[in-house]
Image 1 (cartoon, one colour):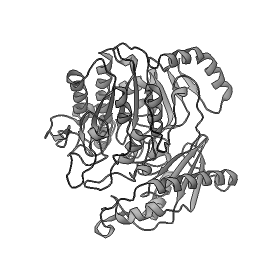
Image 2 (cartoon, one colour):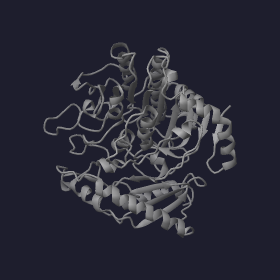
Image 3 (spheres, helix red, strand yellow):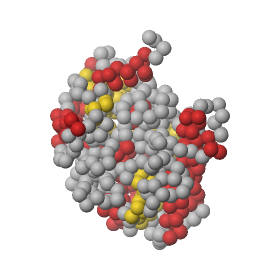
Image 4 (cartoon, helix red, strand yellow):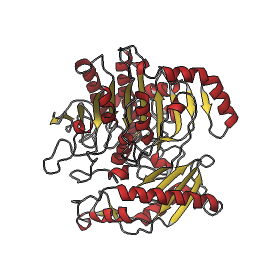
Length: 502
């Protein structure tokens, strides 16, 4: 039986809590027990898609054949309000791994090749959190947090310096496409062109790790970051043939997600075949919203935007040994919740010398409820609006009076704007009643608007103050400025609000 938790319906939630209390207490007692593989701590596996939309998985109303991930959601916990850490790649991964708003760490946008911007060494990742607890740690797939392999001039932290004992991946996307990529790096050493599709190569490496590196007496943390379905897309012909009613480009996109699902299924089977699935917490999501129109479902916005279409993603948890399954939960969560949740789950000590923006989700995952005591904030200088903040049922968006065309990669002029931005135009939405963000309430709910604005400005100033001011960025005049923010805002507004009304 699928149990759906709707946050406003308090009586229903209380009934569920009472019915689930014995199960929740049992789960709490069994968080850190001697599991089937003889370890005390639960294993942790994070699986990440790249640029997959909220509405791409069949289990979220999509078209692509995704039986493995759909089964994970059906048997585990499916979140319908899961938010990524940012609307594009690098900052979202910073939020996921550190539990902090990415701008605090200075990851203001995606990291271009050769950029001075990177995840600083003083940031603590989930992998670094778990190593003192005896965890084996491994990263597979897309990295996109620093130069890879090391460049002596840039001298940026490598995966092993961010807590990962083992790593096979790429600095950014699979090149030249998902088919036969040439840019995989294993533990700092380029391995040349590989034959096959990127997601299957990543799954191969997970299996290889279990065969050659896995120590049965120790728990493990695996971070599996697939490249799919980020462009440039390449998919097997036999999977493309599964979508005969679509044009070639669309069919290849759906086939790309299906191929990723097959690879995710292999990762899940690697756990199950070794009897590790019951004592493993799995989290699956996409790093941000899609670039493909239609993949965002009914949401407004796409990748690179702070409307929900750019930041709301599928979110699935599974931990059969401790979390009651077959549940669908509407309570909002975001990537920054992972680190504090994993810290509590494993008993790992979370550093007290920095601000964290996520909260511990264990009470919710174990069958109870949570109260979020801090808002969720997204700050993305290159888009318009630049800011979004969710607090309760409401989402506030804010724009600055910025008419300077922006480059695709970060430059010195962007850095100036990032540190001085002042939001001037606001939109307010009740995203529980208005999922597609069609009805702006800023004029009709002035008290709520002022409450949200005050919270946003306070948090924004704190984040701006903490974020590094990168030196050595490209000069603005040397880069092509191709993001005209006023024009893009008007175009996107027409795309999502005025379609069929003009």
